[in-house]
Length: 193
Image (cartoon, rainbow, N blue to C red; front, side, top):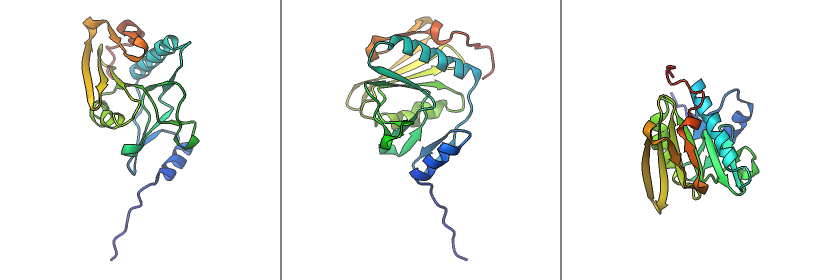
């Protein structure tokens, strides 16, 4: 009996599938992985962050994108959908596709219990290969808590934790402050997420 070979989906296969799909999937070096659904807290936090960032960048040369814009990470051969990306200047598109960018300066992920470890380790390792990427923020959806990684040099990142008592997260990007009262506005932390 001859062995059967399993065809690894190509990038083109993945992009065609995404155009027709009812749900989003990530592409990780030849594997297509369906993304899990979000919770109301996850969504509310993302909406709050996008609102604050849009106001802060309203008259500046920055663009804020939410989870429907895809990110291509060429060095790791990954297509993914970060919760929030901020780009300084004009977006650089993957093969002129207006749904896939290459150049975020800031990425924010709202942590889900099921994806927290991947967001902190696997995704962050991949994000660090992006030339213009300088700041990574992780926000908990189950408690008032955040983490920030700031690029300080070649292969050097500074880590900072933020708890309820800190009240705010200061971003290097245009020296913006994100207040926990704004981040967690209308978020019910008593709900089991």
